[in-house]
Image 1: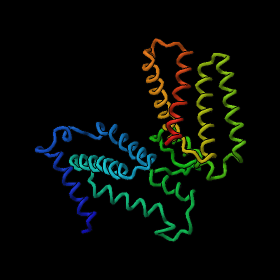
Image 2: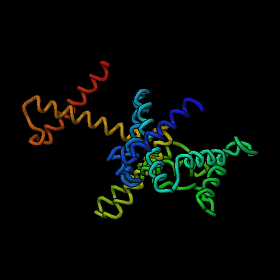
Image 3: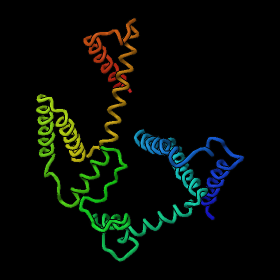
Length: 263
């Protein structure tokens, strides 16, 4: 057995011990349902490590994500549902099936072929050109994936200018709905605007989910700096006027920009 195989077997044994009567009380109490938040959290921490280009952190977070897979497999094994061998065997078979141009007689990669295979695997009799819809994806990622699938079969904007016109059109329609105080229409047009912006991000080569996270983190840094400046002047943020907050906000942006430039 390879070193990787030996270490993986050790990991499975560790998880089995943790779930045993003599193991960890917290680990024994967990279920598929209770572990869902941790699975999502670990996946996002992997993404964060990639964004930060922190390879040491990435190594650790990938391990934490793997732990979630092993955890679920152990619970399923105890329930007589499946085990890690089944998980790996299913994955291996799927990789071979979905790459007939590598492991079979097909010539070259085909998006349509890929989606047909996925549809067949999911039990779908009718293949949809838009592809299988994975509703578990975050909304921004789901929108981008659907747009990519549509573009792969030729349904797409011609240029970035066309997409920008669509964004402005959706913004104008949202403004009209706001003027008319039409709450149902506002919700619909706001969704259309977000969808158009995701399309724009695709044309610009920008990943929307990660970019929004970066913008949010930037806002947090600026807000914390603003609060620091206000406190430094002996004031409280909750007692400051809108005008004062605007002034401190601009100061925080300038201060953080100077720090960034000096680095």
